Length: 397
Image (cartoon, rainbow, N blue to C red):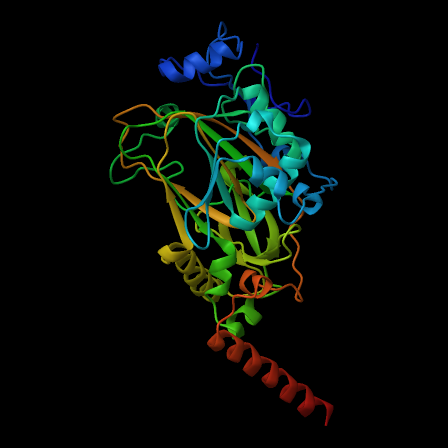
């Protein structure tokens, strides 16, 4: 297949890179079994856009999105009763499902999986026999598949991204001190008009030691904040930027710039109705309406709350042929490069786009929604409500 841009409206493109790495044996076996044509090379690299306006115009329109979790049985009987075992990995985030094949889920089970992901943030399935084509079909259940303008993809299966650290290192060399790539806390595709919802990463090849991935809960990060501080950030928006920079067509001499979108920093998940903190150190640039110094201090603190509370995180050790499905609306994640490229790691990823981020002041936190508030939390909320009433009384007089 001759390289081409993902959108025919993109005219000015950079030529694709040529890669000559050997495909790891487990990955090759999976691709061969799936009937992937590797005769033209692997992976397929689309021609990359040079200019920011081309990237802004990709999917730059409102699209309907119905979250499958909103259709699901709250008890998730069809999904959970079919599993051999359901293992909560931590109290706040992460569940492993044993004994189910993702490719064989019924429509009802897929809806219930969507709700489970919305509640538990990330769900894991080991020993999966799933082709890139089947992975894409499952992704379509959760929303429109994102086809990235410039990342490597499985040949003939657009939207199935190749996650291969050795390939990434050919563009951005990694080292112990600067592992780069996904080895930083982030959330995928925040620069989109309608950013990412569920991402499904299937790793067919993993190191024997290391290479874990970490996720942190946006629900719990928000709940770590005091009620008064939550009230301060509720409704505020920030500028989120793309992972890749581009040129300004009218002023290319100005250098590389990022694609930017404005979104709320606290958002509400449509399936659970719970509030979640939605910022990440890699791509949340600044809070709208604040001076840079003010924004930097507040964002720095919010990043730290997410990243430095291990009780709201899960660290997952991969095994070959394992799938992880997580919700980018309520998490950040970080891929550990502690194996330092000593062994191959390879997988395929499908990301489903969701709704435009929304904020609802009346939405509860996760702990409120589940009735988990302790006496101290209840008292804090009561004190804040009383303070609000006193302020209103003062203004009424």
